[in-house]
Image 1 (cartoon, rainbow, N blue to C red):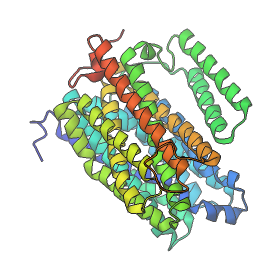
Image 2: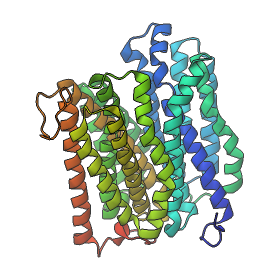
Image 3: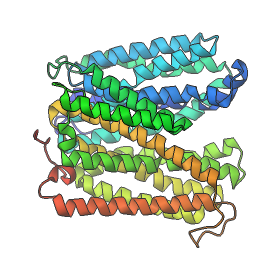
Image 4: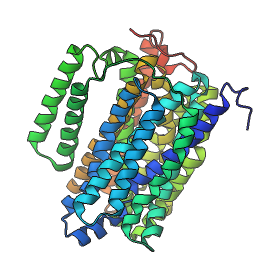
Amino acid sequence: MKNAVSTGISAASEKLIRILAFTMTLSSMGATLFNIVLPDMKEEFGLSVAQVSWVTTIYGLIYAIGSVIYGKLADAFPLKKLLTFGFILFCLGSLIGLSAQAYWMVLLGRTLQSAGASVVPAAAMIIPVRYFPAERRGYALGITATGLAIGGVLGPVVSALLVSVVDWRWLFCVPMLMLVTLPFYRKYLSDEPLQSVQVDWLGGGLLAGTVTLLLLAVTYGGWELYVGSFIGFLLFVWRIVRARQPFVNPRLFRNVSYSFGLVLSAMVMGIGYALPFLTPQLLAEVNRLPAVWIGFAMVPGAAASAILGRKGGKLADAKGNAFVFYLASSLLISCFLLYSGGSGAPAGWVAAILILGNVGQMFMQLALSNTISRTLPKELTGVGMGMLSMLSFLSGTVAISLYGKAVDFGATSHWNPLNPFEGSAVYSNVALVLALLHIGILLSYRYYAQQFGSATKSLLSDRTSLAKPE
C-alpha cells in the first residue's frame, strides 16, 4: 500500500475509511438478515403476510428518515457523538429483539435497530467528503461501496447458516459487532462541531411525516395516504421557506448542479432495484429453480461488485467521475438489453448478465455520489448527503412497487423480438424499458454537460473544489 502522506491521505483517514467499510458490511447484513425467517415468525406468532412484513417495512421506513436526520445533525454536532448514540440505540434494539417473546417486542427491537443503524449511511456519505481531498474521494467511496457489496453477499449466507443451528432471534446479535468499531471512531474522528445551529425539529417532523405517509401509500395503497403525503410535503416546503434556520436549507435546491445530480441519482437507484427484485421471480417462475439455486445465481454479480468496488473508486480519481459515469452507463445499458433478450435463458446466462448490472450500478452510484458531494458547501454537506441517501431509498421503494404491479399485470407478447423464451414476456419488456430509460439518463447527462458545463463544472469536473454558497 502506498504511503498515506504521498497520496494526500492521512494515516488516520486511511484507517477510518476501512473501519467504515467494515461497519457498512455489518449494516448491510442487518437490513437483510431477517428476510428468510419471515415465514418462521409468521407461523410462531400467528400473523398474516401483511402483519409480518412490518419487520422489513418499519426498518426501511425509519432507516430512510433517520439518514437525513443524522445528516442534518452532523452539520451541528460531532459525528463521533452521533455514532456513539446510534450504536448504543442499535444494541438496545438488538437486545430487545433477542429476548422477544411477543411480536410487538420484535417490532420494537427492529425499530430501535433501524433508528440507530441509520447513522451509518449518513456517516458513509459524510466521512469521505470531510476526511478526504476531492482528488482522492473516489478511492474512499470505492472502499465503502465494497463494504456494502460484501454485506449483500454475506447477509443471506450468514442468516441461512445461523438459523440452521440456533433460533432466529439470534440474528439480532450479528450486527452488534458494529459496537467493536466505536472506540476507533472515537479515536480517529474530530471532536469539534462544525457550526452552532438550532435544529428545526418541526421541519424535521414534517419531513418524517411526509416520507412515512408516502412509503405507506406505496406499500399498502390508498389515495388518502397519497393526499396526506402531498399535504405534508406542502407544509414542509412552507416551513423551510419560513424558518430562520430550516431543517433543510432551500439553498440546496437552488444549487442547479446538486438538484440535477439528485434527480439522476434517484432515477438510477430506482432502476437499479429491478435486478435484485425481478431476478428471483424470473428464475422461480420461468426457470423453475428452487430458492437455494436462485441464491447461488445472485452471488457472482454481488461478488464481482465487491471485488471491483475499489477499482471504480481509483478510476474516478485517475480519469474523472464523467469517465466512470459513461463506463457505468455502458455496462447498465448492455445489461438491460441482454436481460431483455435473455429472460428465460438458462440461469448461468442470467447470472453472467447480473455481473454487468451489479458492477455498473456500483460504478454509477460511486460516480454520482462523488460528483454530488463536490457541489455542496461545507456547512451543507451533512444534510445534503443525507437527502441523497433518503431519496435513493425512496426511489427504490417506489420502483419496487411499480415492478411488482408490472409483474402482477403480466404481458402477452414480447416487445423485444430477439427474446424467444415463453413465459418471460413481462420481465423482458420491463428490462427493455429500463434500458431505454438508461439511454435517456445518459443523453440527459451529456446534454447537461454541453449546455451548462461552463456554469456548473462542479457536477462533471474531475477535480473541482466544493461549491461556494449562492
